[in-house]
Image: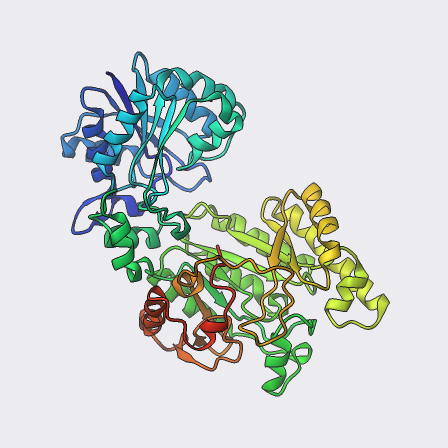
Length: 531
């Protein structure tokens, strides 16, 4: 049997070349695993001069030097940048007379060769065309392909210019899935709900991989249970309140009442976070998390910040960080949007391959009447004027950020009848729409959910695991659900982020033991997920 093994390195992040778990890097570990799996077959390392997004790729000369130092025999194929179509074309050409092809990724340090060989045995026993492991943590094993289907995959991927990802093979095959003989090794305990990726592509995944560096297909279920706290590494999402005011006092949002309790109506507030303070926080984030999404919209309308474009630039000067702006679509000027677009273009692609800026525009209605009702606007003409402004904002954003603008609809009893109309309109116009469930903020406000979407079995909160919320004065509450900031774990202006983050790790640990104290007991957001 002749197996052609591909080690794909066209999208490597710098973390893949850093020392891992006190030893060799993820690249060297995956290279050795690929070589061992190949046996008498050949190994081809696929490198690039640029990642698909345009972000600089790991230098192929450096990879060649590392391969030489490792003593592993492997060829190197370099492209300017990889697309899905190009990837299959190269595989088909380079596989030659091989019987099978196996796809590994060069940033996966935890390959289980026993599981990988079990997959190959299954692949051969059942004469499969495609074999993969399902339900295990991602990154434990390769995808295995029969040589004969490579030309078919070339045809199926014709014209596809997207990046090669860990799901590329399955995504291509599912276009005509009934035409292929597929085998899977189904995990005895399905952990897909944990979104656990054993790869060194982000700082967070690097740390998870290190914490589980000795994981195998035999031990993963027990390890996930006994080391559950290790899945919480460093924040991947920072929600920052950059402005205090908002043009609306929406009846489905707790912020107007929370603001009023502090003495000022939300529609009258003019306070904002000083740019110098914001910039210092962002520098801390870049040092601590290295890869993260920074939202400017924890509460309030970011358009009300006098230098919101400067805030965006402060985030984007760090290539591991991306920006999220959730907005009402009210108050944006052409000049501000142009300045932000220019800052994004100048900053260039992100290390994470996420967009530099993602926009979410809250509409929650398909027409002005419902829009005004939800926002407490009594004047019909004013509701119509503001609705038109929000729609115009989406159009302006779509010109400047064509793939990164998302109209949003918070689904509630009050607007349920307009959901289908809203969805169809925006799906047709932009091909993108967000339908979000209503959040009662731990029963702080009336529950307006149309349906209960909570899972049958509760798992630890995604937001405690991944998010840090920072209020306009630097206060860090437990999470966004703590609307009144009844519990503070420090101040991001003055305190070390690691100390703040570790300060409420015990709350996450409690949840791994199914203990939900305080507001967590009434929370219905634990299963929702930010970028």
